[in-house]
Length: 212
View (cartoon, rainbow, N blue to C red):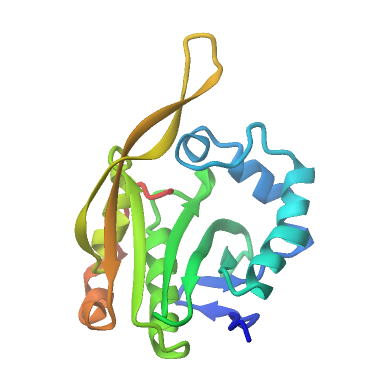
């Protein structure tokens, strides 16, 4: 029998991570049409509200039911505004491992939301779900995503040369594929010790431009 993730919500000091719902369609479409999100993900461009509705109504539930992964909306606790997305993919229930990725909407960058959401997800995976490994892959030029991995305590394991297809605009404005390297990161339960403290400073959560 295939193992699956439960339909859950995870709360932090500032965020609520919950299943996507139909009310998220406009904000999800707007977030996925951002230039930087388009550059580092494989979502179709342009990303329409119909695409968002299909993701929410079909793709995300199918991934969870099949045991392959989990999509969580990242929302602000006070405003309930959608500020990002956490994805778990390539889940191996025998090894108890999964790959984690994150996207932050352009209207919510610079607040440390990716680090906060990713750390909370990892804590839930290692605690409630008894996972033993979380893997992240960041494009070699995606320094913001690499900062997030470092902030939550990930260890860089090496480089997969030429394994990533990013996107860039040509002079005439057309998106084109650009091959680059993947940096592979891992997070084990023991790596989380002290990670929470590293996320905070005297003024609260450390800010930097994190988005994908």
